[in-house]
Length: 355
Image (cartoon, rainbow, N blue to C red; front, side, top):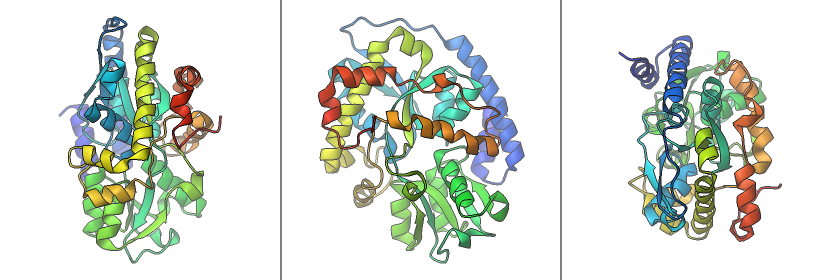
């Protein structure tokens, strides 16, 4: 079995030791870095007025809505971009695909991006996609974070979900020694586990946390806002460095499209939900509409740069990285240019950076 196959098999089972999974993740990260070297620089720049197909990878949460909406409504084509989605396998796969050169851009949790970048610094975060929406939820019998002591906590490895859960435990005087952490490959596995009572609590993204709470009548122990403040980032928009250098205008057109999508989603989420439910979000439409209030789109996250770098402390504590990322991990130069050149795009969206 390949390194990738072993890693995913162990990850999905939720029974592998933390040390073994981390070892396999490191091996696969090295393989991805080698693969990146072989794939970089093999694309040619498109003509200014031609439609440029851009290969994207993505996650499952509402923070991916600007990407899904832009593809389903044809927004990308209005700026001479055609988005092509690459299938993802499990938690963190989007960042690995980006680092290894399988795609040119990705919507991915920034913590997964952080881990992949320290192994293969071949890409940069260029903008945001979705903010807030990370939930720590529990079954009815668990009333507080303190009640998690000695119980099973489900999460996604190295994801923003795990880092938030880890930070919540620390903020309440608990550590991983006080709980039994169980890893799942995706939100569907986590959802099934807490509904079935296999775990007492979990960290989960929208719209799936809303769906779970509606089914089990559980508790929302935290939504990240009391821990991180409002408009904290979850998924971010990232692009490979060689792509940024070769075709910056195409990257800017993608950012512009995300701003347009944010505006349209914020002003008619019913329509956005109808475009994306079932195909991208496996939940009831009512759940998706309710969940939208907890995880809005957010493209301008320039004021969250330090916040993302600060999460390196938790990543280091969990042995997901051996060093902090360098300053090139985040590059908001093109985002700045888009806002300066197209102020109307920024002025009409609801979620704005404080920069």
